[in-house]
Amino acid sequence: MDIIGRNRRLEELDRRYLWHPFTQMKEWEEGVPVIISEGRGSFLKDVYGRWYLDGVSSLWVNVHGHRKQEIDDAVKAQLDRISHSTLLGLGNEPAVELAERLIGIVPAGLSRVFYSDNGSTAVEVALKMSYQYWIHRGVKGRDKFVCLNNAYHGDTLGAVSVGGIDLFHEAFRPLLFETFRAPSPYCYRCELGLVFPGCGLACLERLDAILREHAHEIAAVIIEPMVQGAGGMIVSPPGYLGGVRRLTREYGVLFIADEVAVGFGRTGRMFACEHEDVAPDILCLSKGITGGYLPLAATVTTEEVYSAFLGEYRELKTFFHGHSYSGNPLACAAAIASIGLFEEEKTVEGVREKEKILKEWLESVSGLDHVGDARGLGLMAGVELVRDRDDRKPYPLEERIGFKVCLRARDKGLLIRPLGDVVVIMPPLSIEREHLAGMLDIIRDSIEEVTGG
Ligand SMILES: Cc1ncc(COP(=O)(O)O)c(C=O)c1O
Image (cartoon, rainbow, N blue to C red; front, side, top):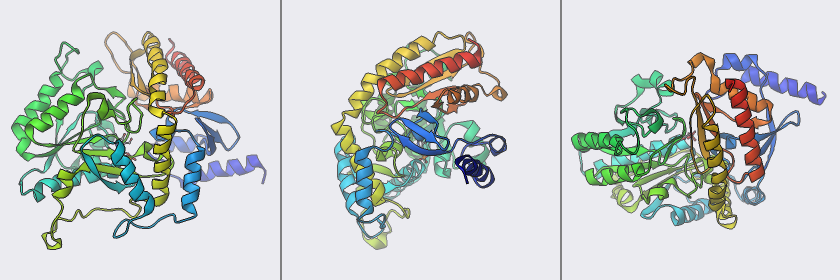
């Protein structure tokens, strides 16, 4: 079979057998799928040999680029030893070494690593751990969580319970546990109708009110530090993160920082909590942990939380949670190599340099007729398109304006995915300046062409 015939067959098989995540398959079946065969640096190649810039870092995971020699070598070397053995009742070399490396870089006070294999499970672990922490401490009735509107913590049911994006989460409401929801720190569309900084962070006062009344029922507050990612790249105003930490301490509830998206350099700090000098009780990590190579997650906590689970077996304080691939050696080997690269290549400093280019560009597109808000931190940004800038009216859902902009960008060689009407900018952290500039040009042109201004 010639190459075209083979590719057509792959496309047909994709349409016939696959069910893609977050995808309306009726529409997918009518289109032609892009099928990736290779990657290098910030680029992906499809089966026809067309190269695209990977503008979403393969769903926010890629850090040092594709086919990074040091990570390739680390995974290959590990393949020659063993690909997988369980962490239930056994240790494995890369998992142990990685735990030490992680504790060396996470915020102070975090000292124990519990592995799983994706962002949602990192969050599930954090929820169950914090709930059971109180039980083991002999404190009754702490079975609720506080989360934020517009929050996204993954797609498993616990993670969806603490989610706050109605489009994704509402359909599952009858299956979910109840939570207290505090306002999203979304200044462009402030739920309280206020304007920063004059508001004096009134959204924190709402959180304060929930905690004042209900702290005795609350196990933990969970947030995405600094940027609510899937909610639309919502950057929290200065003082918000530190304020949440202060309130959780004041009312004696645990603080879970979900850094699945913002961790590992994405916001210009190794961990977003560093922006406001915050140390959580529980930190959720995944995505960039392996440099974007393999599925791995870590839920990192304090000795205080960990020690509550210690006891005689018959006391049943064991944390009964684990996954077949928890602490997979190949993934841990990739993660160790990735952390090494952060040091060798000064990746985080590089992000801060490139952030200047992105910030300047965000400023410049803010003037376009249909850009309501252009916001970002580090190398993660969103451009919110609106039908009317004056009254901030969104486009009707059926117009799918964000989707159309991304399709147009694809024709120009850039792969990006929207979040509703927010065009997301999430290149690999290692992206070269000229490629970042090229990516931003394409996005600007695509926005102008699709919105007509
Ligand atoms: C903040 C946050 N938490 C959790 C998750 C879930 O991660 P995963 O898709 O690996 O389950 C995501 C995914 O985008 C995320 O952005």
